[in-house]
Image (spheres, rainbow, N blue to C red):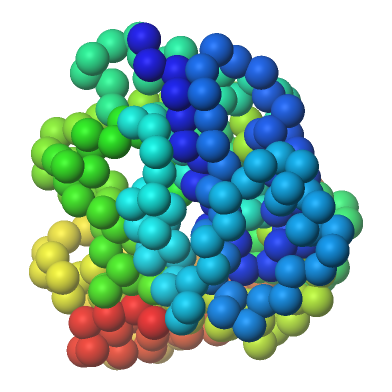
Length: 304
């Protein structure tokens, strides 16, 4: 059994990562570990408090000279990792308890055929504290599922098999979708543990513009993926080319129906009545934004 692990955390705002550092550093398990922070904000100024945290927990800090995006920062951390087991986690993802690494290592070591594992991602942890627009931003992300990158452990040999994250095509979104597809092509199954990680989404100043910027990124990822692999490769229930056809034939009505369905489904998970009345209209704008962004990225061939 190999219990040595390199923990890679891409960071843009160090205030988001302090609790994650504390929990991962204080977890006890058999094996050696290192924590690598890949700072993707070239203009960052490390204050004295954070500098003390870095020294206290013996964290390796790598500051990108230019912005590399999420995929690029993953790759920087992976390439600089010492150990053969690698754990990648977002800066704003908080483990539920101090057994996450131990349980994931146990699962990873349980079979020679297991190469990659996700934890369960919970998005609605701070629901009651969110402002209106933050709730809108998270309203359609209520599933408790695993997601590559948010809390993922894998054996280094996996990278030799499927390659690093595609940082040329995907900058801030879509790298996980692309990585999943390459795993599928190699018939490599993603396993899961039941341990939960809370994706806290530090968007306290969320507004309509910030929502549309985020959804634009998702749309670009959709289009860039289609350009890379072809329009016949399915991405979601209603891919962007189908959305274009529906819009040409029926106008905004299909977008309204889709948004209404999303609001009703997620009302059952959140009990947020205001979302039932407001999201169908805002959702139309979200879907339209995604579709335009996907079209643009399909033409250019990359997500930026």
